[in-house]
Image (cartoon, rainbow, N blue to C red; front, side, top):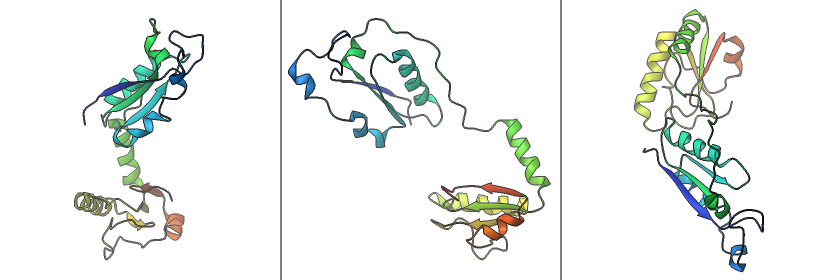
Length: 189
């Protein structure tokens, strides 16, 4: 996906006190309620900016969200007052955390797995498309780590059910015995 920022205008939201506040009857009737909801399903992130908030921070956040992996389109709507402002306070905004683990984190996780006597993997939708690669990868990982696998409320086949490491569908008993739990491809336990 391409990192694209779309900034769209809205009708004024203030009656007075800002440049280009409402000055016509139509401004009370023409705006779309929750404009960002129209495109929310197609964007990585959506938001609205209205004064007197920090417009610079809103734009910085939009650009950051568009570029942070996985990159994708973002949609920021802004009221007429915001678009008519002549001065913006541009300052460094908060930064997103890189979603990829660091080499140190990967090494620490590998140490935990190799030191575990009874590792347990809990999954429910890891086999969702493209399933072939995820299922094969999980089998190879479980076998190399000596980890048992429980499919909790399975949404799809995530691990071969006739495999020796498959412990069924209820994590209660295996959880009590595990000394390391890895949760992969699951919404809620």
